[in-house]
Length: 238
Image (cartoon, rainbow, N blue to C red; front, side, top):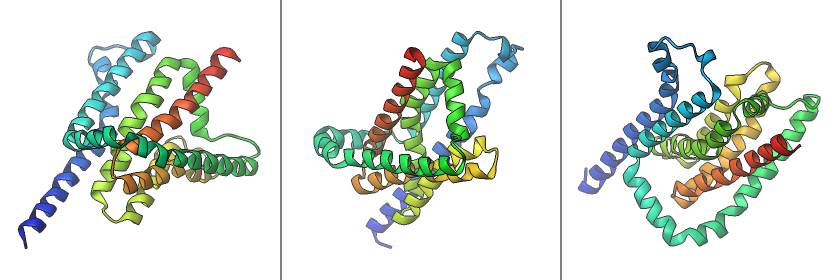
């Protein structure tokens, strides 16, 4: 094996284990959220919402720091590339957000027609949470989710699966599943795997094409930011 092949193999395994660590942090850390309260003998139901919101924001910021640190060198390179090519990326990839929006609207409309107008259980959960903790929900959806979900569902999966088709398919499907299965209530909910997987597939494609994680991350920021802003407008002014 040549020196170049050895270096390439070592680079793959280094990325592989960092990606597994990021995925593990994403899935395991949330289970530790209530631990400090339990150790202090505090009933979470009695904690004021403002305290819960601050705690959750700090906890999610900690997760961002841990996962970003795992990919620090790659992110530094991607950021330098973004600074040089941000206009080209904007012109090239903004259309993919419109594609996401159109495909989601079409698929959601079809499924809602089949489901007699009922919205996805996950969407209902998001709306209910927003009414209880709007600030936390907005920050979580617009700041936390685009950063962490792109690093976990796009970058990590990309570094594990180098085959383009396998990466795009699994990235979108896993992304969609994590938005549907936790709130699964009836078989009809499985249809919502389609609209929730669409952003994952499109974002994965943009990562494959651009080789810069900030491209799908930016689209994710845009997507969630607009949707949550509309949600906030309806909540506060309607």
